[in-house]
Amino acid sequence: MSQTSKIAGPLFIICILASVAGFGYFQFVYMPEVNKEVIVPEEWLNPPEKTTIDILLGSVDQDQEENFLPNAISVTLGENNLVIWSNLDGVIHTVTAEIGKEFMKLAGNANYLDPEGGEFSFLFIESGEYTYYCSPHPWMRGTIIVSEPESEPEA
Image (cartoon, rainbow, N blue to C red; front, side, top):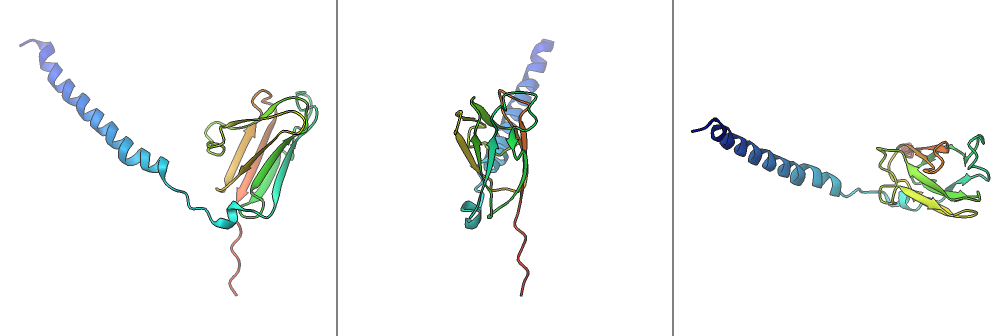
């Protein structure tokens, strides 16, 4: 028996075991995590206030210091967690999540705002710090800090 055929059998078995392990991980670990249902309190879905971020006129100019106004904000779930970006500039801009950030996953991750009045809105439902930028103008950057509401004191 040749040396090659002595190695082929164990290699075949290792490949089969690796395939079964990969399939098992995908089926029983990865897919349940991806498909798990997030339970969101009703009041977080309909906040009484909206938060607006303006994209200022002239933001296409790299030397302009203010582009997203405000460029850093804090919002609270259930109070003002619906954020609306409004493009006041004369060119198309985007709201693009930083790599590795999960917010905007369902919204397409590069949301184009038409010039002079285009809007994009996003409802945050998880606390955390979220950074974003304009894809064609990467010097335009912003941060949103989302916090959970403070628990009400017991009487």
